[in-house]
Image 1 (tube, rainbow, N blue to C red):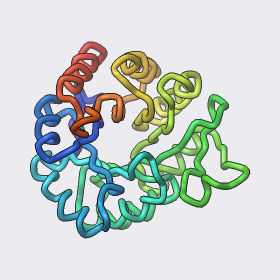
Image 2 (image 1 turned 90 degrees about the vertical axis):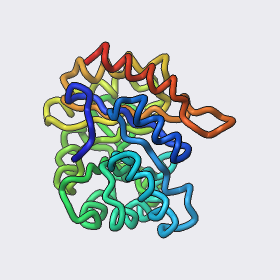
Image 3 (image 1 turned 135 degrees about the vertical axis):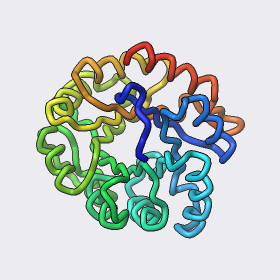
Length: 244
């Protein structure tokens, strides 16, 4: 079935704190959402698979299998989960996209590729794996080249992380323009909240990006319950409907 995009353009990505929270998120977002569950929250792949299969049922497959705070050390856990759970959305480090596509065993599941801001608009950091991110000299390449490599590995999108909200606005514009030119999906991630969500989405849509999956995480999570606030999901959808 695949992800549901509002007007074919925007699909929200928020974290589910529980199975009930996932159900409520899915309803509040009118199904235009991939609800995230983090591999890092489980002691092993087996327990993750068992639990995520329950999420798959209530979300009609629109589960987003996450690393956990963009932690690339979780790349293999996500890839191994993909053997058993055919979720509509997987988060992955740049280095492990091809490995995950092979494990998924189909072309239908969406796999993003985590790349990071470089400090220079037009260049992105692809050394986002658990070993390469520690290198003294990071691998910085043009966005268009990164997109071509992601496509070759079987990836579907750029997960631009960590953005720090609007701290790298000019870099975001450059990434959005490159995604638009290549007809590639963009997933802005990191520091997005109800205050900057509209501007971030406007930048991306105005650049001509065909499909966007904005990740809005900790800013809309209730710290006491660990659940995403349903009223905030509704508020995000209102903004999406106003812009698309």
